[in-house]
Length: 320
Image 1 (tube, rainbow, N blue to C red):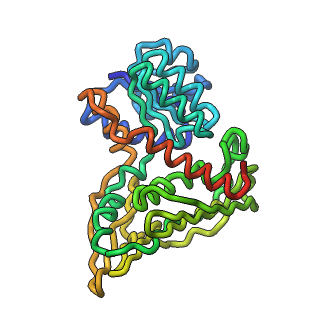
Image 2 (cartoon, helix red, strand yellow):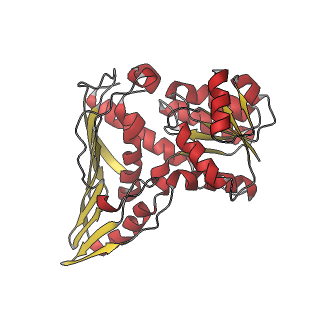
């Protein structure tokens, strides 16, 4: 199987690290892309790729089987559609698009071309999320689910541009935590958002909160690129019989969440979760869906759901 990774910088390098491990398990030819030939050659050498491209037209006109897009948000729809129309299967780093309409068009093209399409959302593949979901029934009635991540981040380049991003920090990094919140809480009836642009240098918001009304509990989302990120749990779940709290002390590289601190009716225990590289698992899962001709492990409708929630927060706080 031949794969082209489009986007050698930034998070693309995390993908390339994952391919080093995946190539030990799956027979792959890996190609890299950069518009700068010198950097493309350097990237190819560093990650032991089989070749490189400097033109996206050359990528889509090649005999590549799979394109892995790690590009700016404004390029997701046009580059993704071009990939699938040229007969390539497509992996796309989150979000699915800047708007629901962009995401819907990508899903539609996937169906009409019969090409596999998956948005890469590594938090979806963290076993801590699904173990917490499984254990929630032991808490009885759930009252509150909290997701949060705060840090200082002042990125250069296209992330400062609200039009290219489709928003600010929330649509870029915060959508990870939206995904987890919705996987734990289910469908929501309503969301109320608050957004603020402070000193991170973004045109879009750098700090946001969302209050979700689920069928039962409330959900609270806090995300910021302008707030010091001391150690704290990324998620907390509270119910009538106890709580489930993510243990930040046990996080390992490549896995967004740690083990679970579970307290039920006064009895506390640490529930261990499998230590995996979530980026490796999502990519490997997609490749196996091609090899085995089965459904992709994360339906793109889930990514569309996540984007819709982000956009609902934006609409609530007047960003759009």
